[in-house]
Structures are given as C-alpha cells and as structure tokens.
Image: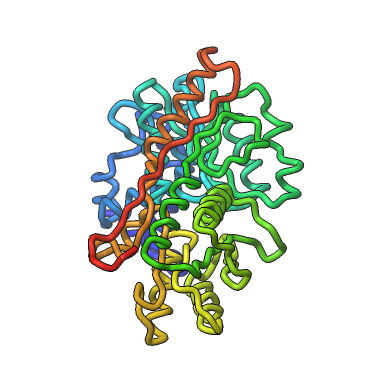
Length: 374
C-alpha cells in the first residue's frame, strides 16, 4: 500500500501527482493496456474511490490521460496505448476540470457519444483564460484530435472582434457549447435562456413584484459578453416591458466574473440593496450559487427570503438546495448538449455537415413547492 502525503495542496491534487509520478513519467504505462482501475488505485494510495476519480479528472484536464471506449479505463494521452495511430481522439476543452455538476454533465455527454462511436476523449482545461483556451484548442488538434468540442469562455468586446475562432482551424470540426456568440462562425449548441428568464420574470410579476433587480456579469475592466447572462437579460427586459414596466437604474446590479470570492460579491450586492430608499422586492441572480450566497447575506441582516427579497437562480445546482428546492431555478440538460455537440463533430468528419448548425435546447424552469414562492 502506497501512502500519498504532502502539504499545501488538496488530497485529489496529491493523488493526481502521485499517479503521474508512478505511471505517467517513468513509462510504466507504455507496456500496459492502461492505468489500473479506480478500485486498484484507491487501494494503492489508501484513499476513497471518489478521491481517485477526482484525481483522474484533474489529470484529464491537463491532457495527461484520456478515457477510452469499452470499459472506460484510463490510458496515458502520450503513451503507446493512446497514440493517434492506435485510437481516434476527440478533444473537449472546458474552462475548468470536469468535476463540477454542469461541466461534469457536459463531459459525460461528450464521452458517451465518443464511446459509442469508438473514439477516445481528450480533456483540456482553459482556466477561464482566453489565451489559454486558444492554446488548448491548438494543443488538442496537435495531439491528433479529429475534432473539438469547446465550452468557450465569455469574451470581452475586443476579444470577440479579433476572435481566433474566426481565423484559426478553419475547416476543422469545432463545435461550441453554451457560451457561443453569433459572430463565432461555428456549429453551436445553446440553451434557450431567453425564454427561461422571461418565464421566471413573469412569475415574479404575477406574484406582485414590480421592482425586480437583475444581476449583470462584468469584468473589472468593463463589459463582458456572457451569452447566457445576455440572453437572460433580454428575457427579463421582455417580461418587464410586456407588463408596462421600465427597470430602474438602481436595479441593474453588477457582479464580477469569474468571481474569486462569491460571498464577498454577495456582501456587495446585499449592501447595495439595503442602501436603496425603495428596495427591489425580487432579484434575478446570475446562478444558483450566487442566489444562495445572496440569500445567506440577506438573512444575516435580519431580513427574510423570499418575504423581503425573492431570489431567483439558474442552472440547478443540487448543493445549493440541500433540503429541497430553495428558490426558482432552471434545469439545463448539459449532458444532452454534450451528446449533440460531439455528434455534430462526427457528422462533419463524415462529410454530412457542410454548413454550421445551431441547436437551441429548451431550459425547464423549476419552482419550489412551498406556498408563497414566486
């Protein structure tokens, strides 16, 4: 039994480093069919299978291992068991490791489509950085990937005007998921956040709310083109307009993206709300976790949610609703989006898709069962 110890890093990171040292750097995998099973690795390093799975996810995000078809075992991305001559590769570039709920679902969908069609999935992470994303896409093609599914990071206006996606890898299968912009001339799989937010806003209006705040995602240096947030804003404005209402300037709240400290962001929004002479009675947050943080801060001020401030979230995060649905939210099917995106790549490889295709998936709205919720 091998014990992985160390300080200054989490247990999954230490196990990932140990796997790299034991199997990927010394060439032991070259003569094998793949990495040991998750159960075997858990026994070797005296940790849980869940920790090993997280460690393997980190190694995937670094492009060091891939998950192949068949029984789903992991093999080295550069070893003899996973060279382009021995396996067909499809790249998946995510903004972070595929360990969170939504990105994990997206990976599951892509991996399932790849497995059913005899492809390996090579996962790379862009770390929410434009230049890193560009590098990871190029790395995926350089590693032998026949095509790439990309979850693009939100662009600033200048980045979008000079977007590498409109200048590089032209003619190669590259499909964008969720954050794509209309000017990015690639096949896209999107979610209908416009209709979802219009429905959520209409629910708040029907519950009697007239001063409804909306949280805009931005950067420290200015405007951010965050597709989901943009579409939700359009839905919010459409519902308000249909009710004959014009949103107040003080109800257009700003939240930095990506936010390194969500609770600090919630503090700032709560202070802004408390300082209003005529407070908004409802707020459409940027996502479930942001809605949960804001709920905590409002209650810490001695006020009630939803009685004093009704809160709406997005992208149903189960960890934000430990005792049942806490506030209205949406339930996008990222697993299905991954399946469609990977299939679009394969269609283009087979010559069946000659022009970019756009899919817009419906986004169901979920509401709490408790009386009095919007």
